[in-house]
Image 1 (cartoon, protein in one colour):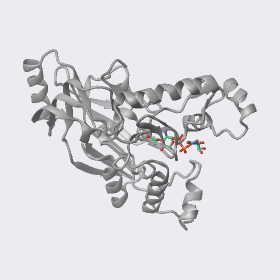
Image 2 (spheres, protein in one colour; image 1 turned 30 degrees about the horizontal axis):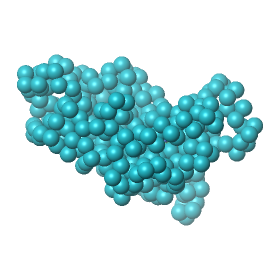
Image 3 (spheres, protein in one colour; image 1 turned 180 degrees about the horizontal axis):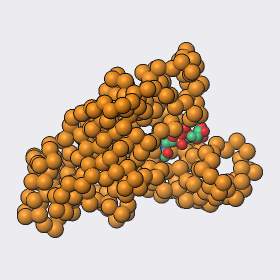
Length: 345
Ligand code: EPU
């Protein structure tokens, strides 16, 4: 393990917020994590602990007066059984490197999740999703270590209680387990998922017949779509979608539809409809607008960006202003997807 003190978190949050951690500890194996937990209990028994991944879904509102843990567990192990590959991946593997590896080797199902920032461990906490696919569809099990006593525990997919951008690790068991490995079950036969609006058109624009698309071509098209809509965090700090898309009762949806007949939506079931938060925010006039050093992205209003030098609280102020405008105009509450760390929030 490596322990660093008063450590800058700038390289560990894609929002590009300047903040420090009192201690920052990186470990590189399950045994090393267990030693780390023992050390924390004996040396810093009452200090708060936060486990982070690639920092692509975090907003630091202040310095972190505690211990930040970061996995250094790498490695991808593949076992072929029948018509599936079982791919066991270290939590610190960069998500898109996994997607690329799988597409190149003929293990399918991750193509639509190409280029999502972050690390594999966080994919299982956050249930990352894009273009009609979600991590939960391909996660077989999640290997963890309890941060209280160092005991290993494997969660089956069912035990993870997956839902839209959510899992048991974000709710009932928040902060209690460190994910060490994620096991994916991936078919060896490629079945493209092309139902999400825009993919077929994008393929055609790239000169590809959707019915004949190859996995690598689909991955490239998804990468192109993301690159045109979403800002590159290396150039402009951001954490991808800042808000979750709200799910509303059909009555609420139909009432709004009368005034906005072109409103996009996704049917969930007979009662519930999901409305894109980006569309709601755009209707409120916020797309491309700034508040101090924080701004709403000009290509996708769901994304808040750091224009340079923003503090976590500047982003929070924009978040609250946007939320209150959406509430006022549509009477809908939108909730951040990003995790706030520190401050009074
Ligand atoms: N829209 C607008 N204005 C905007 C943004 C979107 O009118 O500023 C409209 C679009 O025209 C479209 C609809 O809203 O009709 C949906 O937009 P988009 O396809 O961009 O998807 P989204 O629902 O806004 C979600 C995910 C993204 C994911 C995309 C594609 C959430 C919170 N976000 O966004 O995830 O890439 O679908 O699947 O569910 C992320 O989590 O960081 C992320 C980027």
